Image 1 (spheres, rainbow over the protein chains, first blue to last red):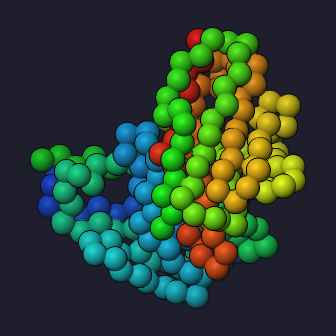
Image 2 (image 1 turned 135 degrees about the vertical axis):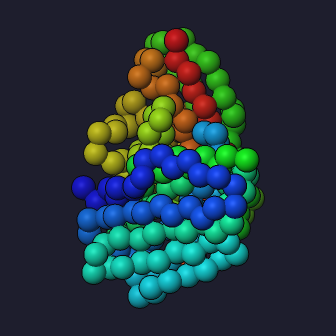
Image 3 (image 1 turned 60 degrees about the vertical axis):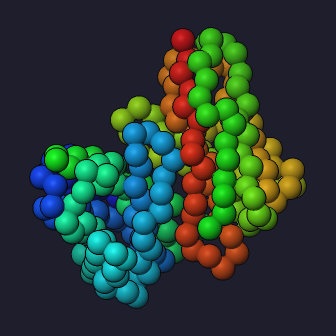
Length: 111
Length: 114
């Protein structure tokens, strides 16, 4: 299966600190996307990184992609209480039009 | 990005009954998908809803249990048939437009089966 794995499964940090989440996948991809989910609600799209890109920034978010290691990381800088959520990576495989999701990281920001 | 709504937002149902979930998009989209998220788990794709033809189901999901309709480019329904407590999940629709790689998700339908 192409399903990705994320680590850590859960992360708890103090407000203001940086949070790093990692995602690994198994097959070649077209792109990798990161989503946020608050309290079992819908998914909010955060950022997309294509297979030919190595790093991408969006506000306080920084995403890296290493296709040789089949891994990606999401860094949230200067975390806020509102960042408390589950974060999922999803890969769009070559030849496939569907997303395959990782298991997710539950991030808790303590005030 | 497209604005996606789902109805109902949540429901509590008795085992053996069926529930139809609606997904409405404010613009025409190429692809529509249905996902299931079991409690504490990640998302699993149920099927791709094809406009004007039968849905394409993923391994482990069948049309008799999860019939899907997509009569046009902005609307789709997913029915969860003959429900059991194991069907208690969040069901999410998502959409993708031609030339846009990002998939956008609806707010989800939280289903509890007693």
